[in-house]
Image 1 (cartoon, rainbow, N blue to C red):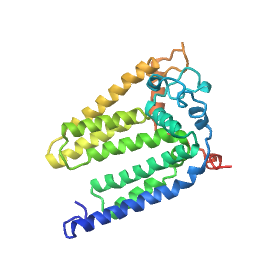
Image 2: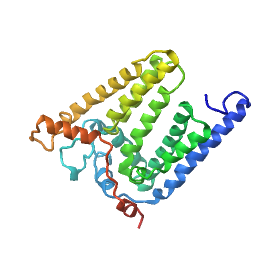
Image 3: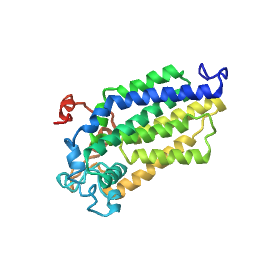
Image 4: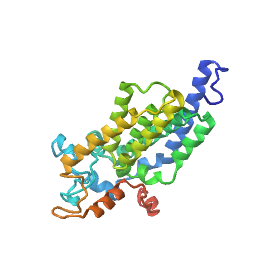
Length: 287
């Protein structure tokens, strides 16, 4: 247990301090990106939202789960990205308002909530309130988050991280890893995998860490987190195969790739090595 939580303070004082710290880190995350709410649709945003009949509600609702992510007319009929929950969030947002203001506001809100999760997870891992606040602030202001939050199309990263953060918060709890808790982890990890392919790689690492962490309190390693995570990944993989007609590794219809190339492409899809173009700072600025 971290310092400051030894019971020397009244319960209400501890709650007040927790609320204050959460308000500080969430406010910092909001302040960093509040200006993006006034931005317009740029680059991939245009293809994925205004030009996408799936998002505009011109196709049956179920088609969200049977098509690839870049399903607009400019993207063609083939694709390797299967991210239906992101498309679903776009469609619901478009139904409320086609304005980019609403779409950007949702991204900022998700980033703020994920920053709060970062603070809570750090506390669960034993950090003091100050250390957890610094960790959450670092996450909120990390430069690589710029594209993910400032572009509407970056919601893939923001939403997947939000769901993975929720799963990690459950797995770092001191409570027993009960079946209901593991089912909740299953749902959160599946949701993350339905937002971005990177989650397939991150989730097992998180589950292994949770299993090792349980050994410190129970004296033995548990595979429950790993089973829940792998089950979620398998379920999403099945949906992906049914929607894309395969794992989505083929560059175009009718083309064939040798096994080595397929493995390399899969590695690219799971990799975190995404380049950042500094011109994005200027491009997303409103006119």
